Length: 123
Image 1 (cartoon, helix red, strand yellow):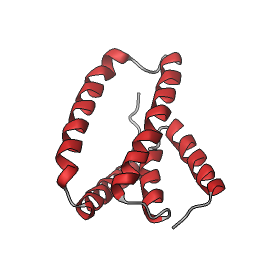
Image 2 (cartoon, rainbow, N blue to C red):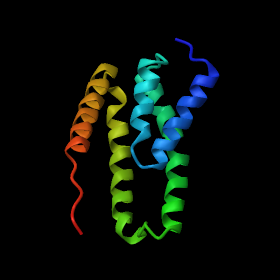
Image 3 (cartoon, rainbow, N blue to C red):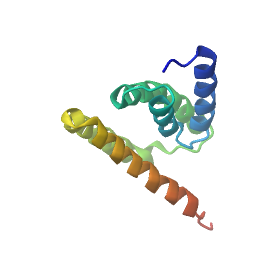
């Protein structure tokens, strides 16, 4: 299914806003690319990464300038996340697309439930 350019720009803008707010616009991008644009899961994941990297870098820069990002605290998470991401990407190369879609759907379901049940901690 072909998506017209202005619609793609509008969706990209909205998801960029959500990413800047830290709400995980990338997950929504994969859903939009798969369901609306009719893109294969592997291509949607690749585009999501290209969308996420500059968005995350800009958001991190602003958070760091605001003094809300302590690099010493997040560095272990960055290293662990990057390492595991590489390993899982390598292992998922031979995996069936349908299996990846189901696993991603389960992840989104649990993430949504967690967000609905979230209660901020009292300081």
